[in-house]
Length: 340
Image (cartoon, rainbow, N blue to C red; front, side, top):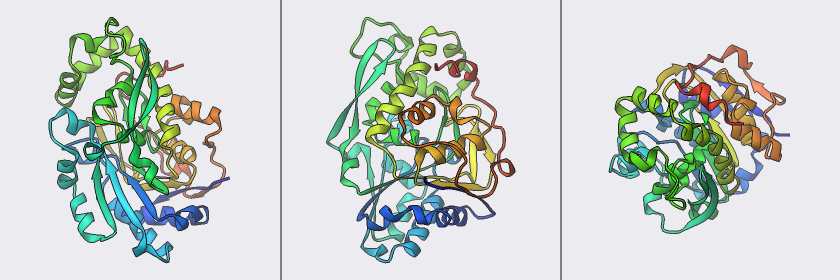
């Protein structure tokens, strides 16, 4: 059984390194890997506390430099696709630059930056919409890596209650397919009428950045939205099966409450979580936000599948109660919790 660490301290970068040091006996496969994927969460184009901080990546690489005898021979790649960049007509490369990721590539000669926009080949993954089956494209580059690391921060979510390490891997979907995960787009069933039949996805994304209350009000009165919050958890599971992270690191220096995953308020935790069991890491992350892991549909389904387990057995470091803060829920939370 994999362990999970929870560290609290006054330095983000050091917290991440320490969290990994506490579980290093579970990381033998990292030692053997040659090509290592680092998947941050850079969903926002301009809101720093919505994104994985570059110092979290530095903390991971600090640990690797001390843990791996052949660190300089390893090839690390940061691969990301910023959803907001797609809707705001810029690129993930712009987001890399804006949030200091270009500096990382200069600091570490064995680190490369790659974007979903630059990927050519995609794996078809069957998902659901509220009207029937659809398919999304997952970057086939994910199969080129020996080891996958997911780096996210704990955030509330506007469909799936919370986003943590496992859901972070959805960022590896083709940009134009990301909205399909939410179930409301129905290209294979154009006769099905949803909010997207009348209001373009890009407009909803634009409005959410500027007046989230308006989108929340719209969705609160939408029967289709209720069906979508039931669909999304199955879709996260479907993609996660193909994009499973070998290691999850949650940089809980801060999190986001309320109108996550982009427009919510910053919550200070000054903590970090790490586990080679992605479900166990996300279980601790959920508890830090004041959620029970089984309250989040995709974590529940993945636990039922035996993908891992989200108990606190094997916890190293701090007690969850000494760090946890009850996050303010998303305004549509009462609808979202009807995912069953």
